[in-house]
Length: 116
Image 1 (cartoon, one colour):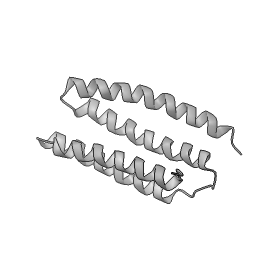
Image 2 (cartoon, rainbow, N blue to C red):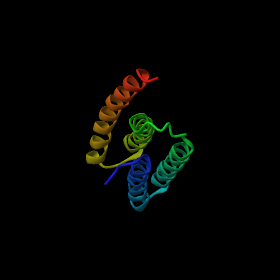
Image 3 (tube, rainbow, N blue to C red):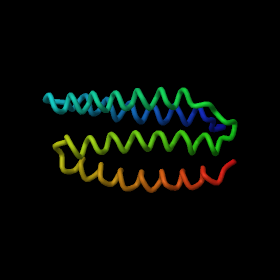
Image 4 (cartoon, one colour):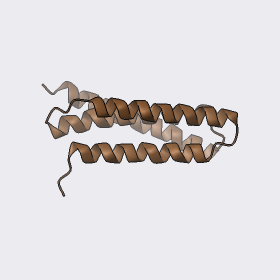
């Protein structure tokens, strides 16, 4: 199966949607609902940004740009978990996500800066 930018976008969007729906399903008080609403807005804003991104025709470049956007959304969602979540296990996972996603964003930035 040939992997295209559309396949990457669909996987990214499905991942964000699933994470957002899990957050909404677990919202049990006002602060959690507010946090879940923020996650939903982040997801929708990110989807709009990815959908409006003009494809370059270079799958490598498009992948790096879209994944960078996807990782930036993950940073917002993970920080929200740290700030408003109750589960120590989920907070620990969010901290790991932030560390990992920042490293990957740096790698995408470095690679993209070398492209013309």
